[in-house]
Amino acid sequence: MRPLRRLAVARDTAHPAQGRLSPAFRNSILKNETRPEPPVTPNDDETPDDPKFVSALSRGLSLLRAFRPSEVWLSNHAFAQRTGLPKATVTRLTYTLCKLGYLQQAEPGGEYRLGPGVLALGYGVLAGMDLKDRAALELADICAGDNPNVAAALGERYGQSVVYLATHRSPNSVSMVFHLGAQVPLFHSAIGRAILMGLPQDTQDSLLDEALRDAPTDRHDRLRGGLARARADFARWGFCTSFGEWRSEINGIAVPVPPVQGRPLAAINVGGFAFLNPEALLLDTYAPRLLRAAKTLSLRPQDHV
Image 1: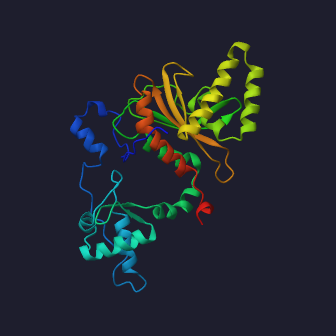
Image 2: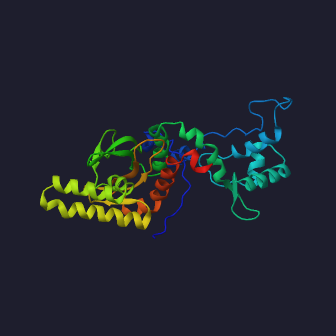
Image 3: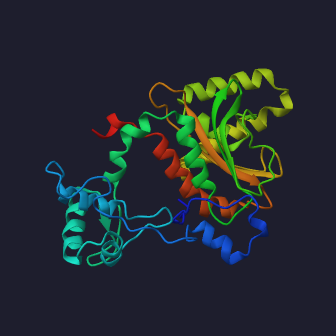
């Protein structure tokens, strides 16, 4: 399997006119550093003398709130600075949170990142949100960063096509493919192939037979090749690709999102014009983001009870 580089992704808060900003100021916007962050106090909503208020719990939660959108790792020193808690207290709290799975430590004495236990706390909230609303946040995160010419979308199958239900485009993206309601072919686009890989193999074969019946004979090999490529890519990487195979100027990668709470199978993709989004960029930078987003969108509370 080709190694995929893992990157910390900052939320894309750049203004649409960012091309007119200086590089330093634009980077400060992307990193959320245009103004200092307020300290994370242990008692945001309650007073310490409230007899029902559990101060120890409040202090522990204040550490989890100390992470900012652009950050992955924090040290005990950073926790102490942001919460105002004594270093000894922070050390005990980080130890406890690691034991419970809410933090993970890189190595003994090293920095901490949020653990899977934090994600588990949000399962109920995520399940209560419409998939399109949830996807909008994930698509924005996929496109975040310095590349102003990338787009992402959520889609569901409609016959022999995939229709886009939610989209996000970076400020300067000029692709006309990624718009709400657009339809792309099932066997030639990355998102179509991802939808196919989320279906049972006999359903894949039935859809191919249907496509072959409706297509001219000279297109049959291309249709069969599209399904074969989808299966090979998915077996190799866990996602599907289409590098100039649907339209010569378009590159894309996509991954299926399993059905959640009765919704149909969906998929998400990322890509754009090939000369701005080469194969290596999509595989090395955007594939890890895409896989994380698909995992988040497929979470259900009952899976983790």
